Length: 486
Image (cartoon, rainbow, N blue to C red):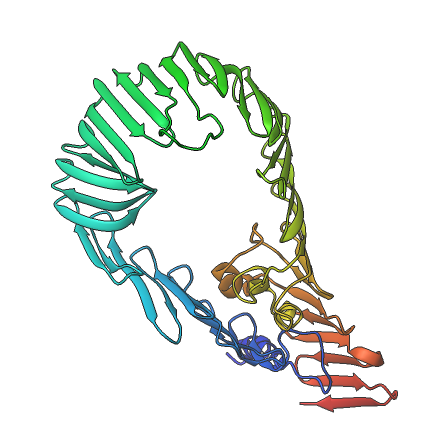
């Protein structure tokens, strides 16, 4: 026992003693002013106003002076986030909360979910709901639909998509539809999958009717342009017909679109016209060979070997360019819109790089890229905006971030995504063996093994060195050197 105790005691002493991160002048370290015990414990507040209290992996808390906070309980078991007047949290997939507060009102949305049988909660509008599947239920949303109601499912069910409410008794065989848009009259008869028909009269745009028989084998539809008497002339609305005999052939003929499909969706050719011009599309066959050219989109695909795609918005103020090579191994994106310009490239799983120039976009210090880089909070949060940001990852070796003159290099980098959330707050410290930080004032800090060894320099030639938290050496601007033991 006399031989084994020192072997255990010395590493523990090194682990705890090396966690003190204090210099007599400002440094670039995000851990400045904190007490650390390896990756397991961290407490304190750094000069940039970031407070951390963590006993990893059981609990982690990160707070800003403005009240923004992120808390984790054995992530991903539970977490809570607060940013300004908005808060949200989750415990597994059983309970979640989403709310907002301001001077005049308090809104708290929450839900208890015991999948797939029981759920209850309250909406942002203060309406309570509950559901016990399959007997009875009312839910504000489920997957991609809203206002879900059911009684002895599948005997009765209804849900809403945007303006359209669909009701079935029983689901999915007999159904009808209600369209809540003004001046619309919609009628639907449904005996799935044998026969169904829908007809809508929209006196501002036109009529359309759609019919299926032995779905999905036969589908057909047609629309007629109509106008209200005395209405001002407008651009002609879409009118024509379409049909599909699956899986053999499909055809669309309207005053805007001409499309033919053979063995749909594999072979298709046609064009579509809008106010900006004509767009031509060819698939021969999908998804391997695709061609598209028009005023709002352009595409060339030889999948999975290589492909490019360009899309623009209607006003031509935004553009998105994408490319890939040996999908999904290599690819890239260039995005331009009034608020930001972004360029990204990747080589799965090893490389990812991204650079962004912002224009009037607020970057949160806790909930976006700055969540994993405390050292960038001052550079970003002090002005409320990040003008430029860069990110590079060579997995599993390192990640590098830069924003407005501040930077961070971390190794190792085992998490293969840019925004790790709770993984970054709770688990990443266990494999982050070396960190290098710098700020726009010129200070640089190097940190090995959670503060066991630190060295770097501040502004105007000041340097520092720390070993095990016990031996310190400072060199000041006037050349004076101070050695110390703690």
